Image (tube, rainbow, N blue to C red; front, side):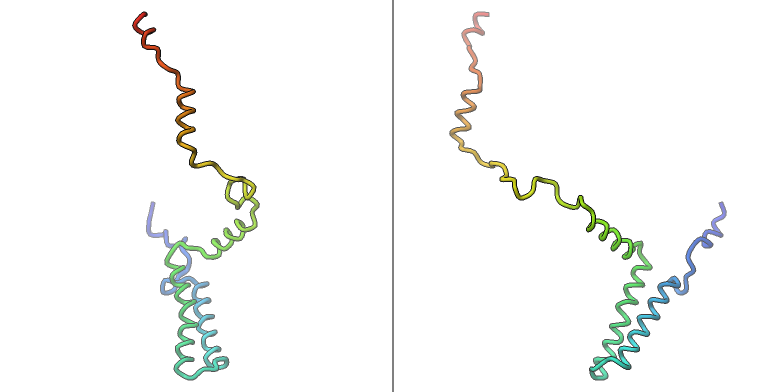
Length: 128
């Protein structure tokens, strides 16, 4: 098999990011610009900090998601399916069970053992 053409099945990447990732990055940068220019009620320094932070968090998330096999949408879908399923409760009888007795009276246990344990007749062993 010729290994030279395996890149044809890969997604198109520009600077190690796919097209949907670039769209998310540009959307985050534009949202930060709109926030900084039109919506921010703070001073200059705090506005610049918040704009970098508002744009940087989504970009960082997009970059980390692109470098790993982690799929947030698939995880959210699985969580939603699990949440809606009927069998998501822990096995057991529920609140109506009283539980088990963990400790018993030691003298009563010994008495029961003496009553149920057969005694060995040594004389019968010697006679046979």
